[in-house]
Length: 119
Image (cartoon, helix red, strand yellow):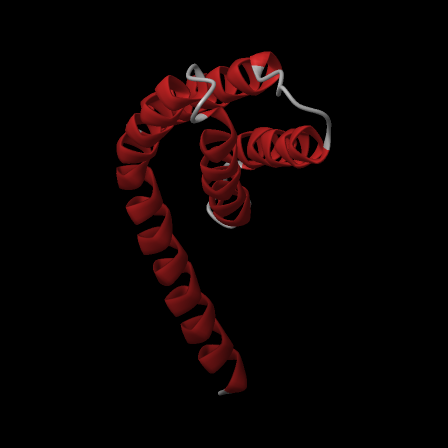
């Protein structure tokens, strides 16, 4: 009897994770659009620091969910972006955001590939 209950709980958990993964996949396009908007702000010296902070916040959220929904490479790239921005913001001014731009484009490429692979 106990075994059946454990199987039921496992099935419920798997179904819940599948729904979360599905919602995450459906959010990827919007996340890419948001990152594109932030990239534009990154090009303006007056908004680059706030853009970096907003990119970092979005990367942090992405890093947090990716491992749970089966996208470890995307999560690792988001973590790398987040860590680089932390170092950049703590450093001297003016900011050199070239590597942020490069990392973010790599992350968005991975997001697009993951979206294509999930279709």
